[in-house]
Length: 108
Image (cartoon, rainbow, N blue to C red; front, side):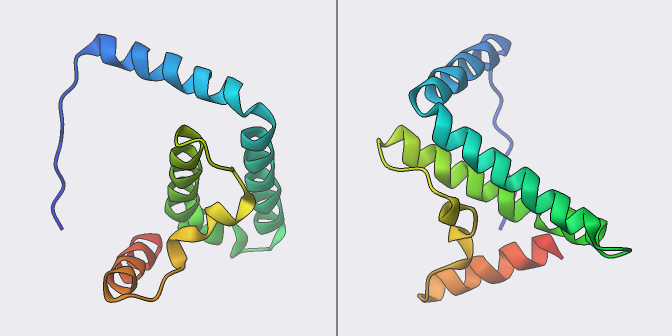
C-alpha cells in the first residue's frame, strides 16, 4: 500500500468547506448526534486512568474512517447512524480481513 499525494488548487479548499456545510445542513441532527456520541466515547475513555488517553489516540483512525463512511452515506442519500463508526471492522471476505488488519495496525 503506497501513499499518493494529490495536489489541489487553494480555491478547491473553499469549495470543499462550502460543500461540507451544505451536507451538514441536509442532515444536521444525525451528524451532530454522531459527533456527540464520539465526544461521549472520548470522555469515557479519558476517565480510565493511565490507559484511557492511549486508547483514545489508538481509536482516532477508526473513528475518522467511521465519519468518512457516514459522510459518504449522507452524500448518497442514505441514513447516518452510530453503527457506521465501527463499520470498518465488519465484513468477512478476504479483502475485508486484510483491510481490517491494516486498519488495526494503524490504530496500534
